[in-house]
Image (cartoon, rainbow, N blue to C red; front, side):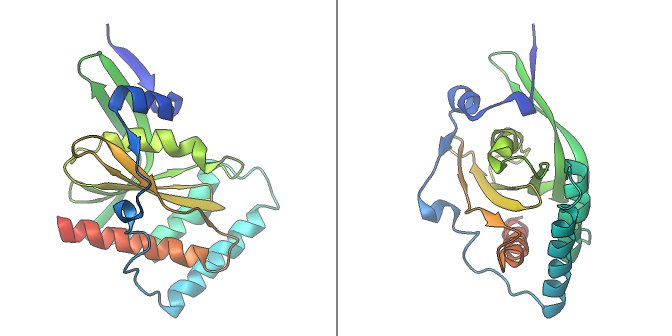
Length: 210
């Protein structure tokens, strides 16, 4: 009998025990979020300042739910970064199944936002309501990344609550391993600029490796 597990019910312990997932704390494993980041134009910075102001305004009218986070924060950042233009395209609520062949287990879930180039995943993005910790989405994010149809290539992801952002890298060569960036906060001066810079840098890497 096939057992179906919802991705949101997965925790890190399950991925460690059933997929051999390991955390890598060696800085060079995920140096992409800090090195060779592109500059932003004054126009991009001004638009990001508006995104920040809008987010802070929305905090005065709780609750700030996932759909609002996506609409008010994530979508504008993707728009400013040209992720809705060729060669990229964006899919929302993308279904994914991860099949564990030997155990008859299917992990099933829906990715909030998936940025692609052709059929290659550029970025998996998970948005959470503002009151949630980023950690609440990490295992779910990693489960999706393990389902990447191009497992021979590194995959990148981002989790955001609107107020905080964290980037994730997952590599499946030899065994599944992952690392995370520092936590970036919308309230911190310059952090929202860094979010867009990192997104642009990761997209450059993926395009170059296509």
